[in-house]
Image (cartoon, rainbow, N blue to C red; front, side):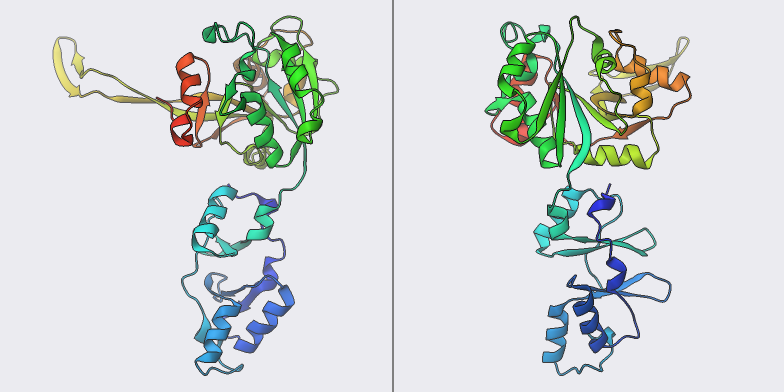
Length: 359
């Protein structure tokens, strides 16, 4: 979903009506400085766009400053929907070598404008990122006998470092690592985070507290939404889009989920008693699974006691029982939970596409 902060806030200064002139288009370009004019129908729908290039080509054809804007109008410009994420919009712009993309809704009414330069700039975010890095990784032994699972290297650096790098590129600079098993190795490597130009502090569990229990040790309780992620994930999910979804939905807790498919290797026979009533050849079953990435508001932290063992599903159920709003963010980005040796092998492949493919 498009980040409201990435939309040009002064986009309305680029609007002109269909009965405008070429001269008015030039004046609009000069006044806004946004290098585009969005021309609107009387009902507010996008009729087309005008850029400097359109004006130059029109004047070369013999048009005058008094000519109607319709004579230079580009009627089929590329547009973005409100649901398009930042990466998708940047890819659209890069492929077509354009620096402005109008945002229109289903009725083609103009609701915003994306600019290349503003999409590339990353605003600083004050939200905390809590990384759960205390697990023993027993299914990955012997690799984890002397190395905590989040520190296992993937494509040249620990999985935990990939998480820090991705979040930092989105403007997040405040991290808390929840550590337990071989936690000193995590601290020795990351220290205070200065090397990555971020601030890292630590929650040290004296005993395993589950996937949510460490949150009860975080004091003071954060006043704004917090990203919480497992430390053994390889994914392209944008944390900023997850936080924006959480905020837009007025949620107290958001869970990233993704579709998991499982195909029955056999033909299924449907029966009613002894009667065969149908067949289904190797059906595919789909379900939504927990992706191990969350956004939690203050109410979620208040629901976990200090030094209390608690898992995320328990926390979400507890919030629902308290009539707090819990929502699911359906993610489609590449994702891999490195829980088994075969997962680590996939994550370590040099080809990125293969590295993130779930078997």
